[in-house]
Amino acid sequence: MSSTFEPVLIVAGLTLCLFGWVLYWAGLRLVGALCGALATAAIAVLIIMAGGWDRWLWPACGGAAILGAIVGVFLIKRAHYLLFFLAGAVLGLAAAWAVESANIEWVKSLIPEPYGRPVYYVVFTLVGGLLVLLANRVIVVILTAFGGTLIFSLGVPSRYAIWLFLPLFLASLLVQTGVLSALGERGAGEEE
Image (tube, rainbow, N blue to C red; front, side, top):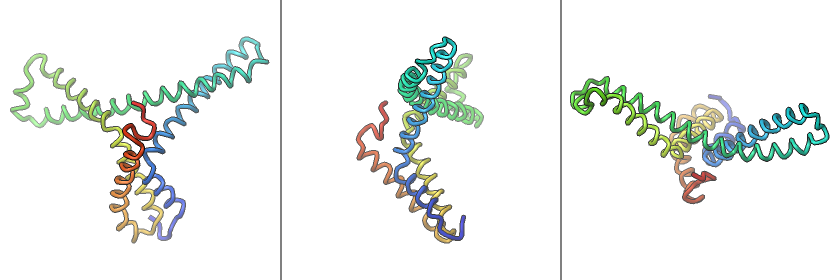
């Protein structure tokens, strides 16, 4: 924490607090488009140079980059959902292990032998994955609100940061959920 005001950190923190969800989806799409465009343009360059068609280099790279950007946006959104599901599945598996390790008798009675234990772990894993997948918007809002609040707190003197942290965090949660409501059912560009 600083002893003076840092305007860059304050502005960055407030921006993330207010528009974290929108910035997340815009940034995710931008990364997907850039990665897709660069990958397909590089492949086009390799094919053009290997074939000796140098005069077609720029049109082929441009067309490949546009196509790659579209495919990149599609793929990175799918990767977003896959990673959220996998994170939830790992948490579900950890929860299953913790519940079983607690050595509670009624839990053991729910797990018949010999096939009950693998089914138990599969159910916990799938439920955990689906719950986190369904809550991905809430998770992103909470994380961006917390991150924005933390960045803001680093930009103000510590004597103010202590008192501003919780109110700013709660206000940014309310603002982001209000922004999501104002943007409609699906949120800021989330199609699925």
